Image 1 (cartoon, one colour):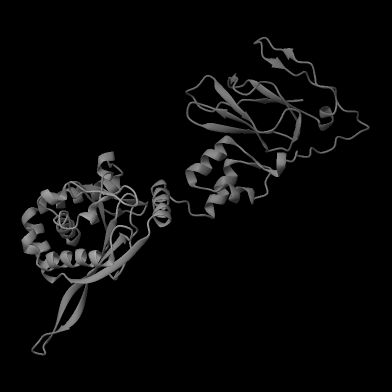
Image 2 (image 1 turned 180 degrees about the horizontal axis):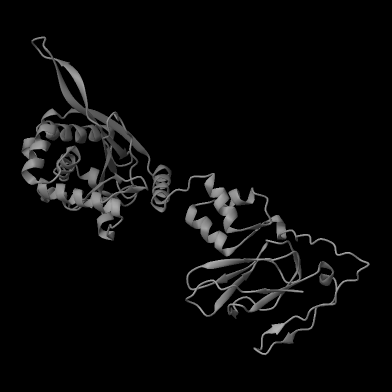
Length: 384
């Protein structure tokens, strides 16, 4: 009979909690198989069998155990077929199973055969389940291993062959799926000359000591149209009604590589361009540091999605559930233009798109909204 004792797992605890037996009492195990999960103040730890044999539990699940305490014993395989040993008590009052008689030398012990999981499903230890949730490993992936007991090491092996999505990206996936399932969106796009807008943005950046670019100008332009195009900022209530927006609260997408954030510039129509620019600059810092407040990310009634990297000429956004419209700003590019006198010049242009819930906004209204935005961006001085 081999005693299985709890090892010293950390220096902070004098006792631990046995939270799970991964092998049933009087079941065969192989050397190295996980048999129990012990929880400390810092983590959950798996204990493994030190040899092959039949496992006999000494303490029950949810019992406390101290470092060095015997929590189970391993006997030779034949011991499982005999009557259950009568428990005895150690001085500390913990019930123990007495050691069975040694097997007859004439009958060699058969190797232990692991019991098949109930219903063919593998046993997934608690630490393994926690790691699966942390790394985004799917249960089907670990079942495909064909292992009787899934441990943390097995989950890590699967994770090395997969790319786990961050929590932020998994939340983005949920929103995208909901949008595609519930919002019948249409899309229109116009081309906007932004030569003057880019020049003005550079001037405003120097004067305001805050970064001003096309996103900041677009937020300011869109917010100024909330009264003229109320449906584009409204909140759907049902098939026949929407709630009018009192202010233009515009979300702006920010992607730092770990998922999408959409902080909101609240009441953008009543705020000067410099204030909008400074708030967006602060939001970019918060996106990298992960320091957004709840208010920063809630309350948008229109979203501006940014796709303004070099070479991006068109992007179709989703309409966020609870909204009716989403603008998409592509990257600026330079095109040749022939003047009336035949001279060839260049100009900077962008494609500005609008995805809209076709239940509430029709194509004509979408184009009118885009044309109004184009007029503001092509004559940006009126916004500053």
